[in-house]
Amino acid sequence: LPLFAAAAERERAAIAEQQEPEVALRQMTGGHNVIEDYSHTGLTLRQHPIAFLRKDLSVRNIITCAEAMNSRDGQWVYTAGLVLVRQKPGSAKGVMFITIEDETGPANLVVWPTLFENRRRVVLGSSMMAINGRIQREGEVVHLVAQQLFDLSGDLIGLADRDEEFKLPAGRGDEFARSGGPDPRDKPKPVIAVRDMFVPDLHIDTLKVKSRNFH
Image (tube, rainbow, N blue to C red; front, side, top):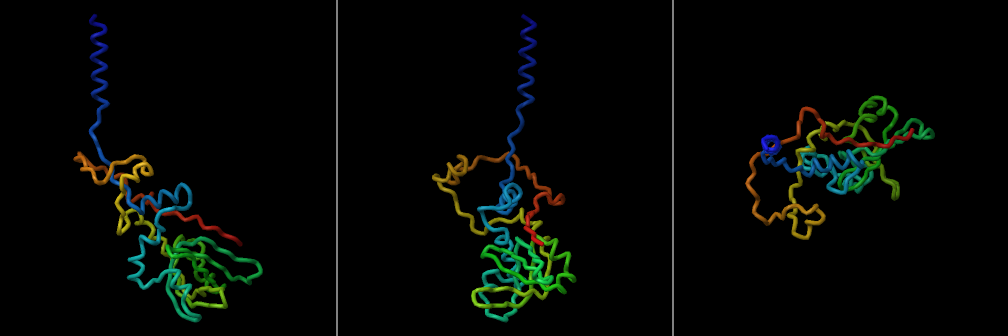
């Protein structure tokens, strides 16, 4: 009947409208994956965020936390890391203790009251901090006594664009862990279009570190 013929024609038109062109999204970088881990769980089992910035930090003569903590007593060092813990015990007479961390491990800082007052915004507001100071070693206890503090939180803004220098290819045995994704040895299908969902100006992909503060 004409009634059913018209209904069938409308159904075919609706199906045609729902057929969108095939679009491939840009693959997330290693840095972007780390940012998503931090935003959901506050940590990551992937590369440490500082590992993506290590080459730039080395150019600025910033050594790793492990190198700083293994330095001799009295040596001047320049290191940086994510701020994990800030502690200012009432019995410490205004001294603040800060724990930072990079891909090699943690480092313990001592910030004297004078430096704290002069650099209060950096001490309390930095997600990533650089420290120039002198190593103080007493037996197994090692501290970095800060002389200068710098806020490097801005370096974390571009982390989403960073990737591992040596990405290991996935084998067929990784398909289960990777939710059954395509095998890298198979020939890729031609991509019609690539859509980039990252908008740098919005800073929505900035790493946010949840530091623990004890006063």
